[in-house]
Length: 323
Image 1 (cartoon, rainbow, N blue to C red):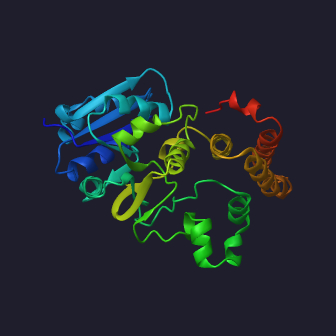
Image 2 (cartoon, rainbow, N blue to C red):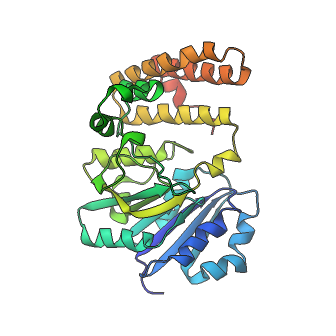
């Protein structure tokens, strides 16, 4: 095989039922340039490995284009990607979730942007749901009390659409034209190898959730450019892995912890305190709203306690990992 131009990196955990569609989409819509597919398996307990080593996979992605890395334990999303970064042979690294599928022109569109726009260090495609509606995952670089309270209490209704799009982003952003962005989801994210080497990859203290935000925030803080392009799309079945791992309540706590860790990595101490205070304003009333739901009340109590610790004893949260 000629020198690879694109390394497609997939981190898998118990994605046996998802991988055929993911790799099948690559086989159906491959880049016209040379490419490789690297799957890092995080100690799956289903039949993922068996399928990845089967003729079924070879019919989609032949061995000469494929590399499988088998971890002995679940190292988390960021750490697994960092392993792939070290062995990838291409100048462009395309992170793709196992519950995602590329569409016609996805891979070539990414390579064309990098080839024609030397100032770009990352490309974020438009992410669609299974029904092709838009996953609205473009976010501000740093959370603030305004974004926290606006999301909880729908304060965007008091704002102009232009202000909400600029400040709150998320569901209020346009998703209709190319624009440099601060944060997006890593369900489908392409980065230059030189950027990954310069910033050191993912922060491995994040196991799952928050690691893509933290990576994007580092890119943004360095003044390097991450381009959103709606002309390039993927389909993403959001949350497929987490549904098999946590209950709704356990997932909410994991996400809250990741959100707090992200702030400790990116925000000033003053903003951390202000954000945690805003979260308390949101969460404490919910303890009374769901007084007769034991699971909900327990979840909101834990969220309140986490944010109080974020204010008073943030260092104590660093040594905890419930992922």
